[in-house]
Length: 345
Image (tube, rainbow, N blue to C red):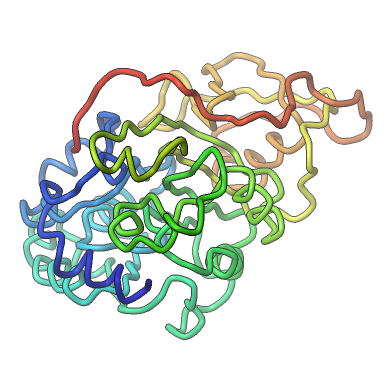
């Protein structure tokens, strides 16, 4: 299947127009802070984009970022502008044809952004074998990935390697495709469905267990949308429902398995240019500037023990436990109704 994926993304697909489904499309309009950067990317790089989400988390200035499955480089080039001259971006992909496109336009983007040529590097290899590429432990502030992990058979190793190369307090921020149940074996062996990011999709609850086993104790869902399938693809898929979802996973030792209440709160200072009024941590945490916002112990640590610490005031400690926060359940986290319509961007 690995070779099938290389052929599909290296030879079969030449642009987003060749995709058979909307699974590898980003339907949500890009946020304001990377929008101007995306507008300056080379057209061929944009044409060879097959992502399903927007992987531009906040507070990237000066960060070292690793793009897992960078493809033709759209996200990597965008991130290289967002991290600035003090930061750096490394893109890893196993498809030579995709990397050739990315490398071909390095000089173009160096001129467009001034620093992109020196702070961006592309490596050919497997994202589940980062050690073989010489990437050391505890070396990246942020890892991103856009609709790629579903294409990798050994997802357990991908998450283990992500934990290894992240610095303490670092973050894996990624978009991918998930299913509402485990994929039947007959579909999992279909090369086209696999290349379309469907047959390799994880059942959402299996993903949560894999992430926690790798050390990411409290995965946070940022956004999600149902994926609509039409025609013969829908007939072959049957009753399985698919969702595009963005998660953020923090490398923090000692996070708890549930949202425990210690009477803590945070106050957002409004100091991030990309979100001056409301900081969005995840789907359930929209923190208004200047407002005392109660949080569980895990959320308190995600903000205090990460690159976000300077942007918050912190109230409380772990001296008194008040029990479990209400609403910490185990139902499927995705919305099953489609939101506003949108095309690939």
